[in-house]
Length: 283
Image (cartoon, rainbow, N blue to C red; front, top):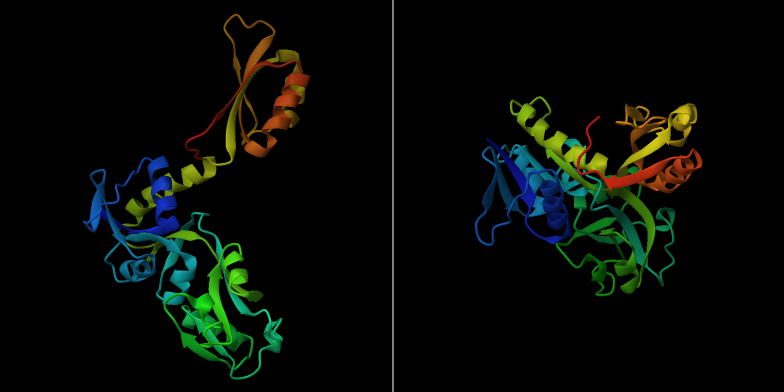
């Protein structure tokens, strides 16, 4: 039995549950209960994303899914077992558009900076050798300059639209974050069980953006096939019952190359071309 800490709400929670479902680890998010079972050997507990680093670091969970920004802010001894790729955002420094501050170098000593990430902000300004006053806030950071609480902020953004809507402009990026599968230690006794979860999730992520292509191709054009359909380890060739001069070709190709691969196969005299999505892919 292993315990997996998952975010209980928001877009991060939705994307996490979707990934788990695609990996065959579908978890039902309970309305009132804290946890639910995934199969017979995984207990999913649903907590706030910002609390997940603490749960994993303290051993209350064997692994968890949360934003890397929250892991770094926690400063707990945690490791990334897998970058899940979704939930991408940036932790940025932003100042009022009407201010004279357009870069970190122009921030004057004593500038008040509102942020929900005081540890990361302090480290960033220390590296930049800037003496600022941090104003910890727990929410609505982007409104702090307008309310006179601070002169600038350090906050998360995805598109920058919220910052612009509050009269702010980005002047620097502190870090880029994505959702990660985190563990306390890769040598932890349950690492093999957590490793099974990691492999299942990784197989789904690897399959995204890839397609399975099948076609019948003239046997005498196989010499030209490798460049047209390289595949992962080269295309797989098999005989067709009563196929005569034709053989069957199977290959995994990037979705972005499918249109070109299909055109090339047609140019080689190929036919009966089939392209389908892949649910999971393991090397």
